[in-house]
Image 1: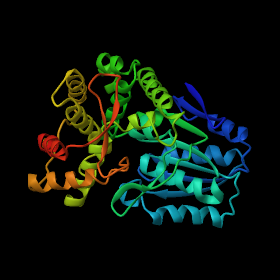
Image 2 (image 1 turned 90 degrees about the vertical axis):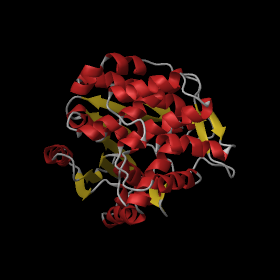
Image 3 (image 1 turned 120 degrees about the horizontal axis):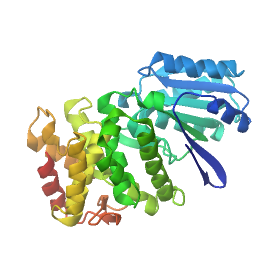
Length: 368
């Protein structure tokens, strides 16, 4: 599978490949890189995958520098960002040099930001390695680091020249990471009419087995839907904001649990699933057909539908207060009140400002 789309009249590509082939080398030739490469990878990825990619790059005549770091939220910092920029500077990279990142959303966000800042932009390829990065963050151009305990508070928009999705990597993703990417897929299925919901409902066994053709189709539908929503609204002034469905509450759950428990309790995708339920309930004032459909799919893939399924080990009131506080730090806010994406009817999302703050508390209480 190959998807091609344009941003500012520049071609961008997504490849879905069964095995690690020579497509990445072909794309390096097409973009006329000077073949100086910084290859950033997550140490959790199978060593044979890393070595296979490294060998392909070296054997094609590239001058490759490898850099390993752990792709967790604690490394999504300015320290990591400047370590990557320093590496490019020390290797005398030019604007035609290439940064390639192999990892999940954290590595993708930090690497893309470094690529955008060095000499105001070097060439950039991304190989996503988690389900959430494969179906969501690998495209759209969002970069970022976390600062002052606020998720993605520093960042910009910088699109990978090419994205390479390898089924060899996808089939080896740990189960929890694999399933936590499914809410981002469901999100695209609820926002726009496509085949996603039908595939999720009818192809459970193939998805659990990680069947190549089924996942290729599911990822293709999801990424094409995302492209429709962002390609004419890169900076989130309108329709692209719909892709934040579930995220106002999701980020609040993530920030609150990390602050109070000092550890990652909930994965981003898991939080998005619960966040979408919250935002449907907030916009509709009651459970409706969309809520019931979403809840059914989440349960079908053994995904959480509230924080009750986690061992919080902290008072309920403390967690409610912290989640409520975190909602007011949301980046989509343009006035004093936070915004979220309401969805009363499938395929009809709308951007809403939360005017009744008491309703926020009522919704939070139902999920903690």
